[in-house]
Image 1 (cartoon, each protein chain N blue to C red):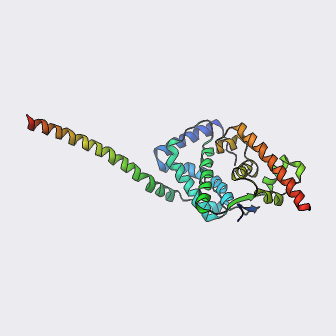
Image 2: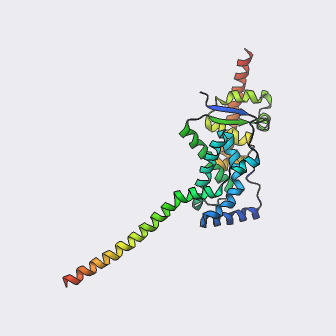
Image 3: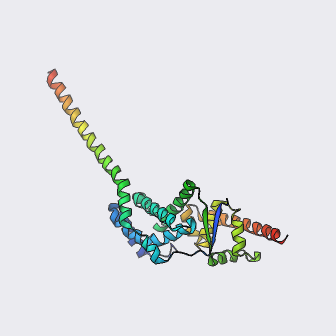
Length: 68
Length: 190
């Protein structure tokens, strides 16, 4: 098979036809499906860190209370 | 498809559009509307079918939307960044699909190349026959510089190489085209 398929003076799609394929809402949806989960995971990760910090402080506090 | 002919006001306005798109993906629609047509044609000339073109163009704009936070203005138009993404997505499409890469030749593009090779009697069909002997990067350079008529500066921005590098590569490519045309011409006459 040849490396390239050469099209001589090909028929270029009209502006109207190209415009028909435009769909920004679909693009935004696809972007949100790919990107938003990452954003949500980042927020969850931050939240988890705060929770771990609070739990550690409480655990240390309780340990000190009961050892006294 | 000239990407450099913008006034300072247009460039500044575009930077504001980019800033808004970074903060709010919905604001990316301004850039999408502005460049969709040119990116579509850029991809179509290389991919050939409308359905594949739509898929690749979709990927181009998703990548652009996702990575716009990383875009930095370095004196080059935003469009050259988009065309770079488009070029990468076209290459990725062919690596994944093992389909044939399309090359679109039209009279205007061939005429531009003829001006650099006046002594050869180059025509569209002769050019089509020697393309097979060129590497992908060489075909890409021919497409950008001659078939799409971009300036050296524009080509350098899309390929992310210096302008002098574009000039050197173009010089070597034209030399190779001349040798292939002469060889082909001798072969046809035998």
